[in-house]
Every structure is written in structure tokens, then in C-alpha cells.
Image (tube, rainbow, N blue to C red; front, side):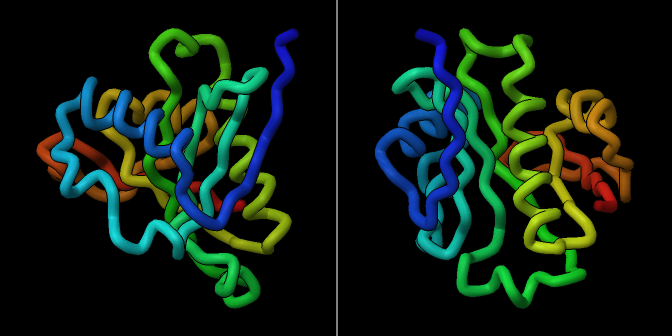
Length: 149
């Protein structure tokens, strides 16, 4: 069937818990205690489904209640991931384009990401620029990047 479907949710669900567990906890050994935050209901969750399976995900560090306040502001995007068997097929770019389109619609002026060091080339290919030096987050090397919308 190969039906792609995008969803924007205002709270975390079992599909999101599953993809984040698979990618961050199982693959990257991020401790469960820091992967899931108590304020997930204050975030916007962007999902890309292939048929009925969540294959790519990203989280906007913003709540729906604050969307109007985000006008011409900076917003951080994080927890961007693609299930292993769907990587290198353009789904990471698709979920990021979807997130960027939503943020443009909400008139956000700048997106910031804490990119894992190995992913900086991916973000660079999408027009993101480096801002700062390498730092560790959850025991993984990251670099702050940004994109003006």
C-alpha cells in the first residue's frame, strides 16, 4: 500500500514511545530516565507513518498553547529519528521538511537543533548552520545548529 501520512499530536502516544525506545534507548543507550520527560504533554509531536507504522518522528519544544506566542521567535526541534530499516531513504528529510513547514505556518523565525555529531551533515544538507562547539548530551556528542525560516 505504501501510504505516507503525517500527524501532529499534542501528547506522546505508544507509537512515539516505541520509536524513541528503539532508537534512543536500545540503539544509542540513552538512559530511559532522561529519554522520556515529564512535560511531553507540553510538546508538539510530529509523526510520519508508512501505512500504519510510525517510521520517522521529531519533537517541537513548544506547546500548542504557545504557538501564537512563537511568532518571530526561536524554537528548538529534537528527538528527530527514523527507524533503522527506513534510514537512508529520505524519510528523515521528509519529517524535517514537515516540521519546518509547520513552523513556517506558525511564523517561527528560527529553528535550533542539538544535532548528534554524526547527524550534522544531514542537517547541513537541509540548510542548517553550526552555532557553537561540540558538547555532550545524554553521553553523546552534539553540536548546536540553526536555520532561519
